[in-house]
Image (cartoon, rainbow, N blue to C red):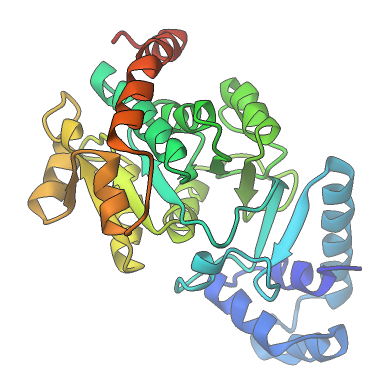
Length: 309
Protein backbone atom coordinates (compact mmCIF):
# COMPACT_ATOMS: atom_id res chain seq x y z
CA UNK A 1 0.00 0.00 0.00
CA UNK A 2 1.51 3.36 -1.04
CA UNK A 3 2.78 5.52 1.84
CA UNK A 4 1.81 2.95 4.49
CA UNK A 5 5.24 3.00 6.11
CA UNK A 6 5.23 6.79 6.26
CA UNK A 7 1.68 6.80 7.60
CA UNK A 8 2.88 4.42 10.33
CA UNK A 9 5.75 6.74 11.20
CA UNK A 10 3.29 9.63 11.50
CA UNK A 11 1.18 7.59 13.89
CA UNK A 12 4.00 7.10 16.43
CA UNK A 13 3.06 9.43 19.30
CA UNK A 14 5.43 12.00 20.75
CA UNK A 15 7.61 12.58 17.69
CA UNK A 16 8.39 16.04 16.36
CA UNK A 17 8.07 16.80 12.65
CA UNK A 18 11.82 16.72 12.02
CA UNK A 19 12.09 13.40 13.91
CA UNK A 20 9.48 11.85 11.63
CA UNK A 21 11.41 13.00 8.58
CA UNK A 22 14.60 11.48 9.99
CA UNK A 23 12.80 8.15 10.33
CA UNK A 24 11.53 8.41 6.75
CA UNK A 25 15.12 8.93 5.63
CA UNK A 26 16.27 5.89 7.61
CA UNK A 27 13.57 3.32 6.87
CA UNK A 28 12.29 2.20 3.48
CA UNK A 29 10.55 -1.05 4.38
CA UNK A 30 8.47 -2.20 7.32
CA UNK A 31 10.91 -4.93 8.39
CA UNK A 32 13.51 -2.27 9.14
CA UNK A 33 10.87 -0.03 10.71
CA UNK A 34 9.87 -2.76 13.19
CA UNK A 35 13.35 -2.56 14.71
CA UNK A 36 12.46 0.93 15.90
CA UNK A 37 9.98 -0.53 18.35
CA UNK A 38 12.82 -2.16 20.29
CA UNK A 39 13.90 1.28 21.52
CA UNK A 40 13.22 1.71 25.26
CA UNK A 41 11.32 4.97 24.83
CA UNK A 42 8.66 3.49 22.52
CA UNK A 43 8.88 -0.21 23.36
CA UNK A 44 5.42 -0.12 24.92
CA UNK A 45 3.83 0.85 21.59
CA UNK A 46 2.41 -2.05 19.61
CA UNK A 47 3.55 -2.03 15.98
CA UNK A 48 0.38 -3.83 14.94
CA UNK A 49 -1.75 -1.06 16.46
CA UNK A 50 0.29 1.53 14.58
CA UNK A 51 -0.13 -0.40 11.34
CA UNK A 52 -3.89 -0.68 11.87
CA UNK A 53 -4.23 3.08 12.41
CA UNK A 54 -2.13 3.79 9.32
CA UNK A 55 -4.24 1.45 7.20
CA UNK A 56 -7.39 3.21 8.40
CA UNK A 57 -5.84 6.59 7.53
CA UNK A 58 -5.05 5.37 4.03
CA UNK A 59 -8.52 3.93 3.51
CA UNK A 60 -10.27 7.03 4.85
CA UNK A 61 -8.16 9.27 2.62
CA UNK A 62 -9.02 7.14 -0.39
CA UNK A 63 -12.75 7.29 0.31
CA UNK A 64 -12.65 11.07 0.79
CA UNK A 65 -10.58 11.77 -2.32
CA UNK A 66 -7.62 12.97 -0.27
CA UNK A 67 -4.16 12.43 -1.77
CA UNK A 68 -0.96 11.88 0.20
CA UNK A 69 2.54 13.02 -0.66
CA UNK A 70 5.54 12.01 1.43
CA UNK A 71 8.75 13.93 2.10
CA UNK A 72 10.59 11.12 0.30
CA UNK A 73 8.70 11.67 -2.99
CA UNK A 74 9.91 13.92 -5.79
CA UNK A 75 6.49 15.59 -6.03
CA UNK A 76 6.81 16.97 -2.48
CA UNK A 77 6.90 20.83 -2.65
CA UNK A 78 10.60 21.70 -3.03
CA UNK A 79 10.82 24.82 -0.86
CA UNK A 80 8.92 23.14 1.97
CA UNK A 81 11.46 20.33 1.91
CA UNK A 82 14.19 22.85 2.81
CA UNK A 83 12.81 24.01 6.17
CA UNK A 84 14.03 22.64 9.50
CA UNK A 85 10.82 20.83 10.41
CA UNK A 86 8.86 19.97 7.23
CA UNK A 87 5.80 17.75 7.60
CA UNK A 88 6.65 14.13 6.90
CA UNK A 89 3.39 13.79 4.99
CA UNK A 90 1.04 16.22 3.32
CA UNK A 91 -2.60 15.31 2.91
CA UNK A 92 -4.20 17.29 0.12
CA UNK A 93 -7.16 17.80 -2.14
CA UNK A 94 -6.69 19.41 -5.52
CA UNK A 95 -3.60 19.82 -7.66
CA UNK A 96 -0.06 20.13 -6.32
CA UNK A 97 1.51 23.53 -7.12
CA UNK A 98 3.86 23.81 -10.08
CA UNK A 99 7.29 23.26 -8.45
CA UNK A 100 8.90 25.71 -10.86
CA UNK A 101 6.64 28.65 -10.03
CA UNK A 102 7.28 30.70 -6.87
CA UNK A 103 4.50 31.04 -4.31
CA UNK A 104 3.83 34.07 -2.12
CA UNK A 105 2.24 33.80 1.31
CA UNK A 106 -0.29 36.53 2.17
CA UNK A 107 -1.61 36.56 5.73
CA UNK A 108 -3.05 38.84 8.38
CA UNK A 109 -5.74 39.40 10.96
CA UNK A 110 -9.13 37.70 10.94
CA UNK A 111 -10.70 41.09 11.72
CA UNK A 112 -9.21 43.50 9.19
CA UNK A 113 -10.04 47.11 8.65
CA UNK A 114 -11.84 47.92 5.40
CA UNK A 115 -8.53 49.17 4.00
CA UNK A 116 -6.72 45.96 5.04
CA UNK A 117 -9.42 43.74 3.51
CA UNK A 118 -9.26 45.57 0.20
CA UNK A 119 -5.45 45.48 0.16
CA UNK A 120 -5.46 41.72 0.77
CA UNK A 121 -7.82 41.19 -2.17
CA UNK A 122 -5.78 43.51 -4.41
CA UNK A 123 -2.46 41.88 -3.49
CA UNK A 124 -3.88 38.41 -4.14
CA UNK A 125 -5.31 39.59 -7.44
CA UNK A 126 -2.12 41.33 -8.60
CA UNK A 127 0.01 38.34 -7.66
CA UNK A 128 -2.34 36.13 -9.65
CA UNK A 129 -2.11 38.38 -12.69
CA UNK A 130 1.67 38.14 -12.42
CA UNK A 131 1.43 34.33 -12.39
CA UNK A 132 2.13 33.87 -8.68
CA UNK A 133 -0.22 31.70 -6.59
CA UNK A 134 -1.03 32.89 -3.07
CA UNK A 135 -0.49 30.67 -0.04
CA UNK A 136 -2.66 31.42 2.98
CA UNK A 137 -4.59 29.77 5.77
CA UNK A 138 -8.24 29.96 4.59
CA UNK A 139 -9.08 31.90 7.75
CA UNK A 140 -11.62 34.71 7.85
CA UNK A 141 -10.46 38.23 7.04
CA UNK A 142 -7.12 38.79 5.31
CA UNK A 143 -6.58 35.14 4.34
CA UNK A 144 -9.98 34.81 2.69
CA UNK A 145 -9.66 38.08 0.79
CA UNK A 146 -6.18 37.15 -0.49
CA UNK A 147 -7.46 33.76 -1.68
CA UNK A 148 -10.46 35.39 -3.36
CA UNK A 149 -8.33 37.95 -5.15
CA UNK A 150 -6.02 35.23 -6.39
CA UNK A 151 -8.96 33.16 -7.63
CA UNK A 152 -10.47 36.13 -9.48
CA UNK A 153 -7.13 36.52 -11.26
CA UNK A 154 -7.47 32.88 -12.37
CA UNK A 155 -4.57 31.70 -10.22
CA UNK A 156 -4.45 28.25 -8.52
CA UNK A 157 -4.38 29.48 -4.93
CA UNK A 158 -3.01 27.35 -2.07
CA UNK A 159 -4.69 26.92 1.33
CA UNK A 160 -3.07 25.31 4.39
CA UNK A 161 -5.41 24.13 7.14
CA UNK A 162 -5.09 23.59 10.87
CA UNK A 163 -7.44 20.63 10.42
CA UNK A 164 -7.54 17.80 7.89
CA UNK A 165 -8.60 18.56 4.28
CA UNK A 166 -12.02 17.00 4.86
CA UNK A 167 -12.71 19.19 7.93
CA UNK A 168 -12.56 22.70 6.46
CA UNK A 169 -12.50 25.37 9.15
CA UNK A 170 -14.14 27.79 9.53
CA UNK A 171 -17.29 26.13 8.22
CA UNK A 172 -18.35 29.42 6.62
CA UNK A 173 -15.39 29.09 4.23
CA UNK A 174 -16.40 25.72 2.80
CA UNK A 175 -17.74 27.39 -0.33
CA UNK A 176 -14.43 29.23 -0.73
CA UNK A 177 -12.61 25.91 -0.29
CA UNK A 178 -14.73 24.46 -3.09
CA UNK A 179 -13.86 27.40 -5.33
CA UNK A 180 -10.17 26.82 -4.63
CA UNK A 181 -10.49 23.23 -5.81
CA UNK A 182 -12.73 24.10 -8.77
CA UNK A 183 -10.16 26.61 -10.06
CA UNK A 184 -7.15 24.28 -9.94
CA UNK A 185 -5.85 25.13 -6.49
CA UNK A 186 -4.97 22.90 -3.58
CA UNK A 187 -5.86 22.45 0.10
CA UNK A 188 -2.99 21.13 2.24
CA UNK A 189 -2.78 19.72 5.75
CA UNK A 190 -0.30 17.67 7.75
CA UNK A 191 -3.16 16.10 9.73
CA UNK A 192 -4.76 12.72 9.07
CA UNK A 193 -8.33 12.61 7.71
CA UNK A 194 -10.92 13.19 10.41
CA UNK A 195 -8.78 15.65 12.40
CA UNK A 196 -10.79 18.65 13.50
CA UNK A 197 -9.43 22.15 14.22
CA UNK A 198 -7.44 22.40 17.44
CA UNK A 199 -5.96 25.65 18.69
CA UNK A 200 -2.41 24.29 18.85
CA UNK A 201 -2.61 23.14 15.21
CA UNK A 202 -2.76 26.67 13.83
CA UNK A 203 0.67 27.91 14.96
CA UNK A 204 2.14 24.64 13.61
CA UNK A 205 0.47 25.04 10.22
CA UNK A 206 1.91 28.58 9.91
CA UNK A 207 5.40 27.15 9.37
CA UNK A 208 3.97 25.31 6.34
CA UNK A 209 2.40 28.48 4.93
CA UNK A 210 5.74 30.31 5.05
CA UNK A 211 7.70 27.18 4.12
CA UNK A 212 5.82 26.70 0.85
CA UNK A 213 6.45 30.30 -0.20
CA UNK A 214 9.45 32.22 -1.42
CA UNK A 215 8.30 35.15 0.68
CA UNK A 216 5.50 36.31 2.96
CA UNK A 217 3.41 39.48 2.99
CA UNK A 218 1.83 40.51 6.29
CA UNK A 219 -1.03 42.76 5.20
CA UNK A 220 -2.40 43.85 8.55
CA UNK A 221 -1.88 42.41 12.02
CA UNK A 222 -2.54 43.58 15.57
CA UNK A 223 -0.04 43.01 18.35
CA UNK A 224 -1.02 39.41 19.14
CA UNK A 225 -2.02 38.23 15.68
CA UNK A 226 -1.23 34.69 14.58
CA UNK A 227 0.19 36.27 11.41
CA UNK A 228 3.18 37.37 13.49
CA UNK A 229 3.96 33.68 14.10
CA UNK A 230 4.07 33.24 10.32
CA UNK A 231 6.40 36.24 10.13
CA UNK A 232 8.70 34.62 12.71
CA UNK A 233 8.80 31.37 10.73
CA UNK A 234 9.48 33.33 7.54
CA UNK A 235 12.58 34.91 9.06
CA UNK A 236 13.78 31.61 10.56
CA UNK A 237 13.38 29.94 7.17
CA UNK A 238 15.43 32.70 5.55
CA UNK A 239 12.62 33.79 3.24
CA UNK A 240 11.62 37.32 2.23
CA UNK A 241 9.29 39.16 4.62
CA UNK A 242 7.20 42.16 3.59
CA UNK A 243 4.82 44.36 5.52
CA UNK A 244 2.21 46.07 3.40
CA UNK A 245 2.48 49.84 3.64
CA UNK A 246 -1.26 50.21 4.25
CA UNK A 247 -1.03 47.85 7.19
CA UNK A 248 1.47 49.99 9.06
CA UNK A 249 -0.91 52.85 9.79
CA UNK A 250 -4.28 51.08 9.87
CA UNK A 251 -6.46 50.84 13.00
CA UNK A 252 -5.18 47.29 13.54
CA UNK A 253 -1.52 47.89 12.77
CA UNK A 254 0.41 47.37 16.02
CA UNK A 255 1.92 44.09 14.89
CA UNK A 256 2.72 45.15 11.35
CA UNK A 257 4.13 48.48 12.55
CA UNK A 258 6.46 46.59 14.89
CA UNK A 259 7.67 44.36 12.04
CA UNK A 260 8.39 47.45 9.96
CA UNK A 261 10.46 48.94 12.79
CA UNK A 262 12.34 45.67 13.09
CA UNK A 263 13.48 45.98 9.47
CA UNK A 264 10.94 44.07 7.41
CA UNK A 265 10.66 45.12 3.77
CA UNK A 266 7.82 47.56 3.09
CA UNK A 267 5.51 46.53 0.27
CA UNK A 268 4.23 49.45 -1.80
CA UNK A 269 3.10 47.33 -4.73
CA UNK A 270 3.29 43.75 -5.97
CA UNK A 271 5.84 45.11 -8.41
CA UNK A 272 8.24 45.26 -5.44
CA UNK A 273 7.99 41.46 -5.19
CA UNK A 274 8.42 41.00 -8.93
CA UNK A 275 11.51 43.21 -8.88
CA UNK A 276 13.03 41.45 -5.86
CA UNK A 277 12.46 38.04 -7.45
CA UNK A 278 13.47 39.29 -10.90
CA UNK A 279 10.23 38.13 -12.44
CA UNK A 280 8.51 39.53 -15.50
CA UNK A 281 4.92 40.28 -14.54
CA UNK A 282 2.10 42.14 -16.21
CA UNK A 283 3.03 45.53 -17.60
CA UNK A 284 2.31 48.54 -15.40
CA UNK A 285 -0.31 49.84 -17.81
CA UNK A 286 -2.04 46.47 -18.14
CA UNK A 287 -2.03 45.88 -14.39
CA UNK A 288 -3.37 49.34 -13.65
CA UNK A 289 -6.22 48.98 -16.14
CA UNK A 290 -7.20 45.58 -14.85
CA UNK A 291 -6.83 46.77 -11.26
CA UNK A 292 -9.32 49.55 -11.91
CA UNK A 293 -11.75 46.96 -13.26
CA UNK A 294 -11.30 44.85 -10.10
CA UNK A 295 -12.23 47.62 -7.64
CA UNK A 296 -15.97 46.88 -7.85
CA UNK A 297 -15.28 43.19 -7.40
CA UNK A 298 -13.18 43.81 -4.27
CA UNK A 299 -15.93 46.04 -2.91
CA UNK A 300 -18.59 43.40 -3.49
CA UNK A 301 -16.42 40.72 -1.90
CA UNK A 302 -15.87 42.86 1.18
CA UNK A 303 -19.60 43.56 1.36
CA UNK A 304 -20.25 39.82 1.23
CA UNK A 305 -17.97 39.40 4.22
CA UNK A 306 -19.62 42.28 6.09
CA UNK A 307 -16.66 44.66 5.70
CA UNK A 308 -17.36 48.24 4.67
CA UNK A 309 -14.89 49.75 2.20
